[in-house]
Image (cartoon, rainbow, N blue to C red; front, side, top):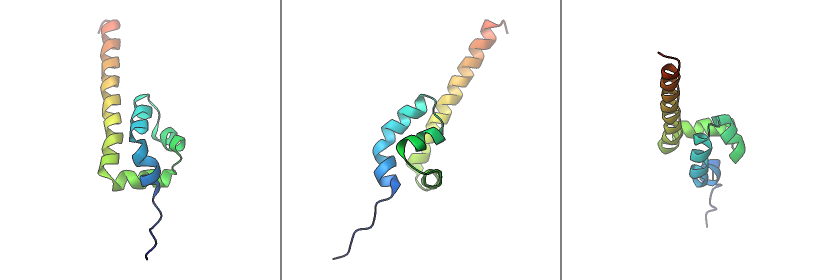
Length: 83
């Protein structure tokens, strides 16, 4: 009988933690802070980000959300300062 291969960090640490990653990202943590928190090396993190579309989209959604937040802050600042 063939022996099953070792599961990757993607299978054991990233996939089961999609909700945690999403939550940490929404709180403004950097990718480095997130991968350190869940116990993944930077090389694995970026390899999986390039390899798995759903993972990249999860991280890109955070960037888009942060961009929208930055735009709102900027607009509020302009309004508050009379511009």
